[in-house]
Length: 439
Ligand code: HEM
Image (cartoon, protein in one colour):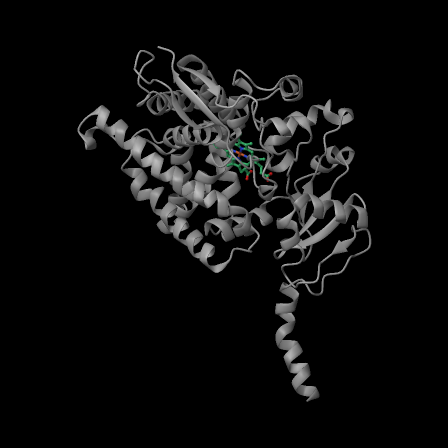
């Protein structure tokens, strides 16, 4: 019996290790709270009400603590005055890659290779800045025009107003135009003319958007590994859909593919990567480039709606100078800045999250304005393009349309905290608006 027990323990030891059972707080490390459930740790409570959970942990352990969430260890830093020193740490100490690699495999099926980051940064430096950025911005403009001017009638029509949810409308247009600008257009030749090709771009990008939105909603639970079987099945279906939709084969049949996407696809081909794996990488690029920009366009649209409650407008203008992540409640009460890096330790990886409650005191800190893009080692390389996209969208809204909220006295919706940690925040419900062409 004794031998049997020893043998069983030996067999299970590696698994128990993976489940995080043996991890202990080491000297100099923050308090460690693994929760009661192996591997899952605190993830269920964390997903149910992130803020309540973090507050509970803060009261229990103080400003810095480590918790286990769905197989990952996260260290939360809640003292904003320590952020600066933290993000300035060198790449040797803070390495974003290994956490990103695990996550990217879990949610996109892509297995990272050695040179990934280098290739990404080369392509981004060339095409998401300077002259490359100009070309992409022009492509964005023509795609925005195709999508926004289509089927809105004219101001002289009988019933010119169209109604929609402001969040969905903004997200939809910015996502689709961004997708077309990066991943290319249907060639005029293959469709037998420009108008037909433009129509195909509209219908194809519309389908893609609705599928993306479904994935977007499953994403947080998928990343934490807590999707129920039916939703996991749906997530798998959607993954396959995207691997095909942005596949190398489909892309090669397009015109105007951005150099950013093209260079990365070429680089993967050159190192002999399997085509099916390149398709998965294209899905990663789709996610990185489109997951945040669309939702971020809601704030500016809301800000521009003529009858925005006074209370928000003052906060907005001096609280948020950039155009990213402009969602009014961010500025009104708090901004959550998620920033993850993995400490390269000998055996156990750790993910760090910086959380800031914006108070008047540190609102004036310069670093706050830059944080929506991340900071330090993994700062967003698409930030210049994203800012242009948002400005272009807002500009065209103002030039083309008259628009107003349907219910001007409606409260601005709360942020959906269940998405905390996964890019731009989104509202829990939409705000209805109506719009019509100015001319
Ligand atoms: C408002 C829009 C956007 C926001 C708020 C945003 C935010 C971010 C943040 C915070 C990160 C760092 C992730 C982390 O540290 O955990 C990031 C990474 C990244 N973003 Fe963006 N992003 C936006 C738009 C874009 C666009 C338009 C592109 C491409 C055209 C892009 C490409 C990327 C890529 C490739 C990475 C990974 C960088 C790396 O691994 O070093 N992003 N983004």
